[in-house]
Image (cartoon, rainbow, N blue to C red; front, side, top):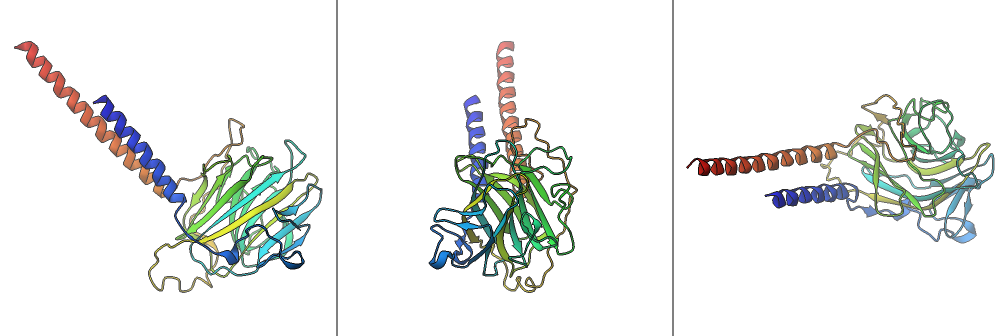
Length: 330
């Protein structure tokens, strides 16, 4: 019976791992017009379907948004608007520089109505319309968090980015992640399916994707542009983009459900207050701000199965003890 219980536990563990892998690796259709695959350079140092400006430098192996020099900014923007309701963006990058512990400022990944407009938010404009995901490497405010720090913001064009609080004021999700000065490429996944935004990271030189945050009720219109920008201040880093792949996700939507999404206003139906995601171990690991409904469901199912196994084992053990007691009595 003990071996049977162990087998059940192993099966449950494999089931959870397999289900979580399916949750992240749902197959999609690569959209090459929105992707950046090396070698990048075309004729006259241009990149098909992409524009860049300021300090951005193009090589065959990476796109460097900023060099490891003070006071630089750069950006890279897709020329073609995205008319997909459900998608997943996977970006490979490297952030590295001479500073071992201090660096600045980080970079941002954009899905916005505006494009190619420089400004104070990691090299791009403030009061944007759409989504910004910020990989921040410099701590500005007094909040009790370690860095690097990742936050996301959905803006309808009326809000300013919270520089003093490193984006906490209007953040819809955040986590800690150690992605700087790695010897290998690191990756981020931004997945938007059925109004649910999930950000995951792979910073361990393997296939181990870990969820940063997951939030529902997010409205992002179609027809916006993908872009990435970076900036340096008194401290600096190289901000290198190695590759971008955009996948269309088949979410099996009913016919006609896409009506009106070209004129929708970016918004979030549930806005949770900012949290102090303190990393007590100071190891720069993850501290999630949310758990997806799918994972909660899996945990609930596993708990029920585990409880059922315990009840069955307990009942069998009780019956055996009762039989042994009757034998001794006779």
